Length: 287
Image 1 (cartoon, rainbow, N blue to C red):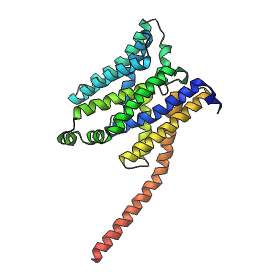
Image 2 (cartoon, helix red, strand yellow):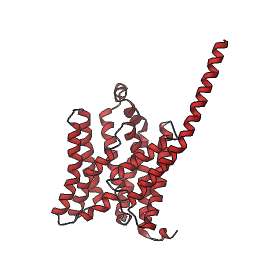
Image 3 (cartoon, rainbow, N blue to C red):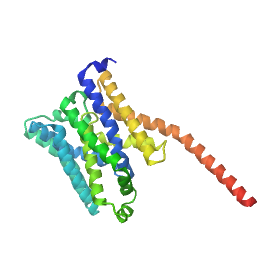
Image 4 (tube, rainbow, N blue to C red):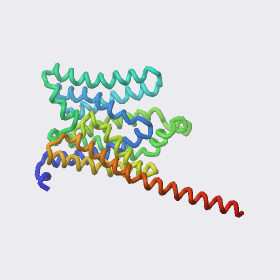
């Protein structure tokens, strides 16, 4: 494949693979907690970090990570208090982050066009230093989401039960939020901050159409996400389209296909379950 002859495409494909693995790894927990839009909000917040990175001439990835983590902690503190004003506070945090990024880049003498690659993804923006940062951040995400999967699963299923069993619920909730923030910055270069939430949610939703258990859903979601991330990046090379849009549209296409396939399977399972129930009923009557 001629695209592998170019260093920038090699870096882009590595970054795409990292996005494909990490996004559904944390997205599975967010979907379970009905916090699917958290990635979208953190993407808005991280925009301030990207702008600060450009203005301060430091790594936008690391600066975005720092700002997104701080935003994630603030989001979790607001959520845990459970006040009715929490939605308003979160909205101000989300859109304040986006507006802050635009304002900072303009004050620093730059142009908002400098943010477009981070907003929607661009394979040409992935540098060698970005790959190093993304690998480090991806290792952290996988260490948390897989290494602590039992504890995180328990908290996502029932916080009160997890608290009764002695789990540090508040710490685990903060860890989920922080891991989501880190994942946002991992995906920033390829998918874009405004589309990263789709990669956290759509592959998981697609996997749920074909699986029932948590582990199976997580594994299939990671496989789907990695496939569409690599395919979308390759498509971007050939048709010169935004990488984030290509990847997300492919993910939606996979979701639609699996939904269509799962419908007859679900009906077949339902008929088999009814038939088994009727057999058990007849046996009980005979007894």
